[in-house]
Image (cartoon, rainbow, N blue to C red; front, top):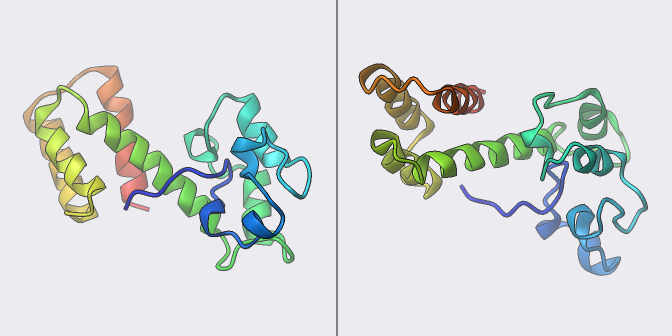
Length: 154
């Protein structure tokens, strides 16, 4: 389940053919200026202080959607693949927080999911039970819980 974050937009630079042929370090390593020039998606993400677009509450914004789904020359095949990758990265970040938290009833199921040892349904059930049985009421838990469920149910 875990994949390295290699771009701001969700492009998997680790499997991109331009990485070696164009000596591209990717948009994170080049501060938003990969081999093809300045990337407006990367610059937007950087300017907002996000590692990747999955951290942005506007995911998918119009700009990323157009880049991922509508650009006939450079868009994704299948359309939207970058957006889905950003969602996966965002979920991984949330689950890492759960796995390292004091919320013991969630920590183990979150880590199991990250390790590829459980299904989304199992994790959703664990999150729902923790919310109802353990009575977590912190705003941090609530925000993470809602985000995780949103990503898992997509």
